[in-house]
Length: 187
Image (cartoon, rainbow, N blue to C red; front, side):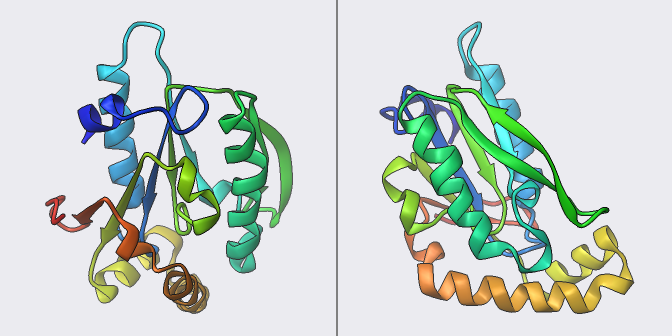
């Protein structure tokens, strides 16, 4: 997948955009880290790959839709024009906005998180990777990561993501489908 992305025409200014999407707990963060390592190893000297974890862009548990709009307008649009992207990081512990961060243009940007792909950025995407894992395992992973006290929040988030995925039909648009349990590529 790394070689195919790097061989593809630029879609994000002079760079490429890879969206790693799928429900919470599916294994997106792990896959995005592996892809980023692969891009860094494959890029020419001085080349840059970076990952934007969308958890940093969502305004808490109800911020999925607004986060997607922020990424399209403040990150993807400027990078397509060759300018830096910007976003304000959300601090989940303080439940408040924190510092503004800048994303300089790069060879590969990996957007990782629920809602990484949307129809609003379709033309800028080089590759959409959908990660899927059975719902029970996703919830188990989420509780292990975030704590039992957040189980109700994780279930409410699941309802938001299911509605968004139904509206966007994200999986149908995927270039690659990965099993989040085994890492097996299905498509």
